[in-house]
Image 1 (spheres, rainbow, N blue to C red):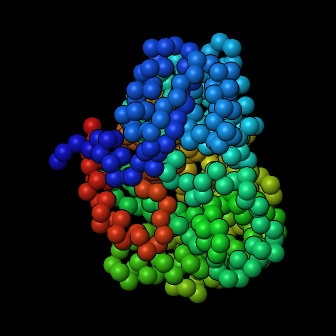
Image 2: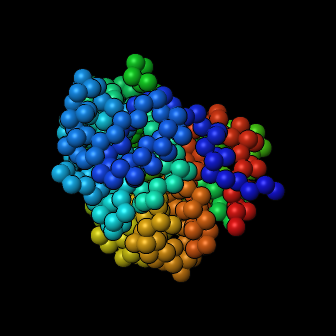
Image 3: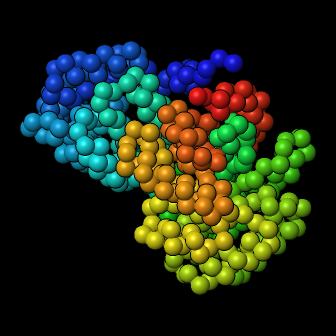
Length: 422
């Protein structure tokens, strides 16, 4: 069977950046020319260059205030360094996307990745260690074409209030999109995660950042979650009727709902009435949701496990007492946060945390799931370390339910080839 390359996977996705303008910020003339050459290979329409942050800002200000598609900047530069430039780009809204590169200590790049870009009109596509490789750069750029809503619209988008969200729940405008979880050893589809999307009548498809925070802590969250679960149950029955193999679907539970006995009663009654076996559903909870109301959360998690449901600790590794909570709770899955998966093949510190998390899951006999798998190198590392399942854009982006059967037929061979990578 032919070997699958990263270039092969990129050809399946249209290059949303083709023809766009980009700015390279790098004090070394040789490195600047090299990076500019890579971007021209990726078919950018215009490649601008600057020697440091000050020159970059002056150049962008002369562009008439329109945000450039991408800034690719070095970290260490005279005049204005890459960290300060990143802050300036965010505050002035001069760029839609950002990539930061460096030859220095990888932990310096971690500072960039730890910055909060959720409330900014600029996306951090990622960071790269020098020397930058074409495939790695293209993989980061591929994220720019897969956002639920362009960042260029974020400054103009007013977040909806509770009344609008309540109407959206009543009109069933919230839909589950499904992202596959693939077994690393053989490439088989093992399960799915249901990710909420809002099919807004005028704004298009909106990601959770536009509605989840407003719902948190209100009675609306319970109705929203139950609506999502109803749709998931319908889809599971539909897929079974189409002859698909048994799949599990993971659904996120909020902290308040996890701790509320009455909600758990409604949730379990809904599943039992549907005819879907509890073993087909995995409830995902975060460490912070368990800690918020520990006693009630543990009680309800115990009830859910006794009924046969799966339980997954989501975003493992980002809380202050992850190991303690994981060991005391009846989890069946350990989901390792993308922050420790993406780039683990390249970053020694992430590699260490990833291996520790996998060792913990394996020692406790719990299935391990790596989130945010986007590169072949990370996939291969996960396989070497014995991770059970992977989830991420290398395998599949979240998709509507009606696309799943077609995706399985189309990608079965590609996933098998991935599993056979040396």
